[in-house]
Image (cartoon, rainbow, N blue to C red; front, side):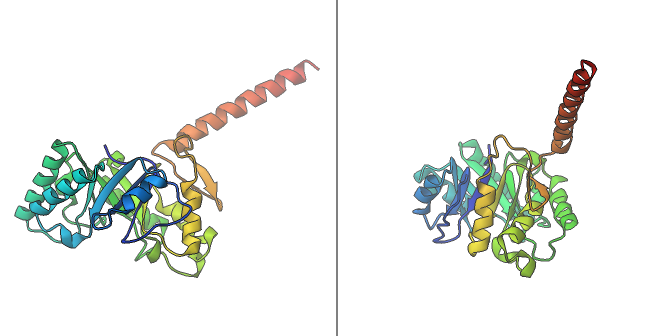
Length: 257
C-alpha cells in the first residue's frame, strides 16, 4: 500500500515537461491530468483536494466515489485544519472504511499538525510536507521528519516539498536547487508538489531520471541523498569488501613476482 519511487502532486492545470515518475496525484477537479500522469510513467495515481475540502466524513466518502469512478488507486486527504476530536474521529473512521473497501488512502500534512498522532494505528501513509518555509537547514529538516517518525513508522512516511517556497539566490540555479532536494528528500520514495520555474523543473527532472529501483545513493553537487535507513552501513560494507578483495589480489600478484 502506498506509492513507491519518485512522484509528483499536480496543482490545477499543471503539466510539467521532462519528468518521469512512478506515482502521481492530481486534483479531483482536474481529471484530465490522470492521462498526463500515465503518460509520464505513473503506475499509481491518486486524487487529492485542498484542506478546505476535508470538512468531515462525507467528504472522505465522496472522494472515494470519485476515485472509483476514475479507476485510480485511491486518494490523498490534505488534513491541515484544526478539528475537534469528534470530527477528526469521524474523518479517521471514514478513511479506515475506504481502505477497507479497497482504496489506497494517504494523508498529507505538515510535521507539527496536532492530529497526526490519531493515525498511528491506521493503515495509511503520510506525505510529510517539508517545505523549507522557515528554514533550509538540514538539521531542521531532520527534526521535522523525525517528529513524524515518532508517530508513524518510517516506511509509511514520504518526504515531499514545494518548489515555490525554496527561494533565494543560492537556490535559483539547477545545481542550487538540486542541493535543496538533496537535503529535503528522505529514502527512495519522495514527491514534489507542483512544478516551478525552469531551473526547478530541470533539477526535478535530474532527480526523477535516477534509477531508484536499484540506486541506493547518488551524489549531486557533492551531497549524498536517497539513502534509506541503514543505507550508509550497507554501502560502507560493500566498499570495504571490494577494497579488501582488491588488496588481496594485489598482494597475491606481488608475491608471485
